[in-house]
Image (cartoon, rainbow, N blue to C red; front, top):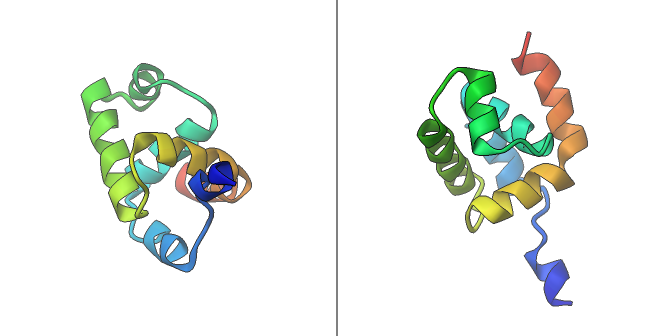
Length: 91
């Protein structure tokens, strides 16, 4: 009931918004699927953890999600699609 209402899914505006993400933002989103922490993502990307936090906030805004927790749920629920993107972005 309430749990179903909290689970984000790919809505038309989300799909359209995914196209507006930068390659760096997509990489952060993909790392979220792999359940990495901000520090681990930062290390993998060669950036600072604060930059990862900024990316996460921007991604959540662009995807019309309620924040970073909703972003992580979104990433996990859409991991198959995001792994397809991974092949394109991480060439």
